[in-house]
Amino acid sequence: MASYEDLDIEPIINAAGTFTKFSGSLMDEEVLDAMKAASHQFVDVNELLEKTGDYLSDLLGVESALVTSGAAAGMAQATAACMAGDDPRAIRSLPDTDGLTDEVVVMRSHRNPYDQAMRGVGARFVEIGNAIETFQWELEAAISEDTAAVAYFVQSAMLESSLTLEEVLEVAHGNDVPVICDAAAEIPPAENLSKFADMGADVVLFSGGKELRGPQSSGLMLGRSEIIANARFHGPPRHNIGRPMKVDKETVMGLVRAVELYLKEDHEGRMARWEDQVNTLVKELEPIEGLHVESGLPAQPFCQPATIPRVYLNFDEELTGLDREKAKSLLMDGEPSVATETYNDSLVLNPHMLGEGEEKLVVRRIKEIIGK
Image 1 (cartoon, rainbow, N blue to C red):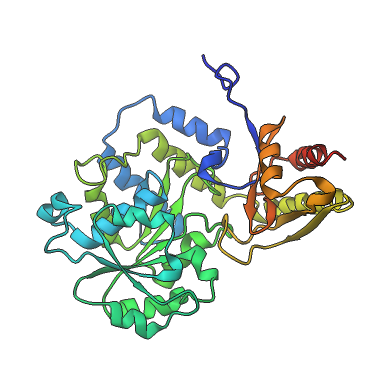
Image 2 (image 1 turned 90 degrees about the horizontal axis):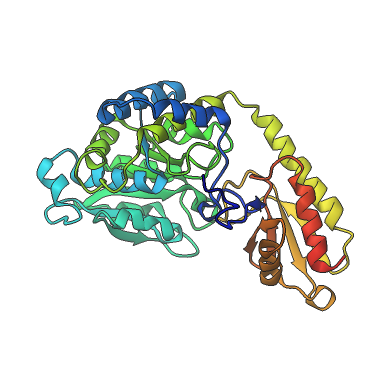
């Protein structure tokens, strides 16, 4: 059996977070066991998706649920559902939207690389607001008979130019328009799994392979029964626009088990561990000459969620011979390889996916590249 070592693939210490490019998160053995058990028998995939959705909605206290092949896939299926509903002709026509309500209203401050999932199924964006401010009257004015949905990206709610979700829901629902809420990486806190749906968001999307630590190619769609039922028409195993977004039985059952485990987890204990790891990083790195060290919560959209503390490092190039990019590269290229991220002028250390004690390896590697 080929291993990472056989293929010359270097495992990394993940001090960056749940980025897909760094393989998201690590699954619990019980999740792997659930996936293995699912692999031994055939099932009807339509029945699997329907009944696991019912189970998850009961578990989370929401109206309806669907396992998808990731949050972006869920965004595509939900958008398709809002445009074409359960009309067979309209479903088969996508991404051709002639004759359909195909506009999605989005704040300019919420535009991001992930919204291509919506445009990919044929949606046309109508942008409102600017980099400084957005008003409810702009949303009201943008809604028309061609509006299929309003898109809301929770990470962008941190921006001063963003309307709140409550403000968006008030206007959208006042015009009988659904709101699709992307919350892919917005846990912890665990309460967020039901919070946005409880607030009235019609569809809420979470990644299954980030904080939930389910299969990396999984996602959760939560919300209104009618839209989620229609989203199933657009996805696998049917031969419609969501066919490439196939989710297998192993992934479905793996995510179900991951959610079960997550709801029972000691969330306060995990947060305390992250805070301890941040404190260790600060204590060990602060004395290094030429290195400015700060800790705190993100104030702008970055690697979500914003509830987990980070360490921000700024290098004095004259004293260390490093800037953030060179430091990032050296950490990734060394042994052990350490994945980090950058933000503004800082190298950022995120404890979210660090294993117990791995913060000490991060400290060692940073001291090595500085020569201390």
